[in-house]
Length: 277
Image (tube, rainbow, N blue to C red; front, side, top):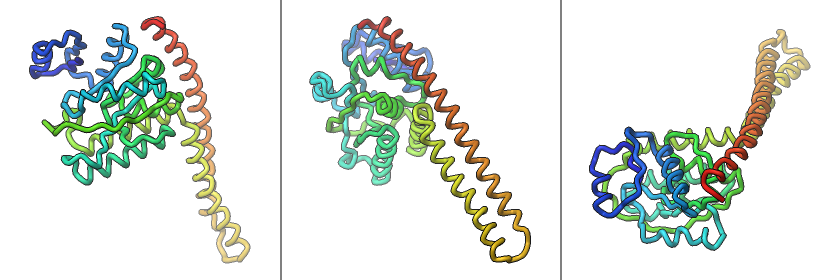
């Protein structure tokens, strides 16, 4: 059990129910850090598969066997419990819509097709955990998906049910904060691993927009409409220069990505030495 600086009786209740393994933070460190420390503790104690679940009793622990089966059968390295959010009664229509939209965005960023990317009920193989590196602070859910897609780590989804709602989430104050933080995490990780794809598109759009003022200038010049139309030349020049700068930033970011890839390969070897073969 991961105690992230809780102020209630979580630890006492867990001990009363026979829990003997704890990771404790003196103050709140956030979900992502708690996940990292929990994974480290589990792997140091010889875990081959790590299943994580939230503390709000949303997920049915009886389905852990279903969750780990694709890993045991060598069909996947990460398995995500699909809550089938459209069927959850206490989810509002807006929340169901945003859940589907968020899963679609995360799937596109990762190059995968995941029905419930935000689900916190997951199983990870030791191999996948050694290759994943959590850098965000808010949540690991979206970050691990985008990383796994980039690193070609096999992901599967398993349909699950959900328990009745017992309390509001303590991870975020409202759905808007959750959307902002999750979106920021996806954008940050996408820029880390696929910067050239983004900056190339930005550069292309700016270049096309920059050509329009030049074409306008030539048309006005050919029709002899009067005036020098320098504003068109100036706007086009600014846009083209910005396009070149965007492409330059993309090249630099891509070189940084290559260096990160080499550094992560070394980190993988260090993790293997720390956790065993």
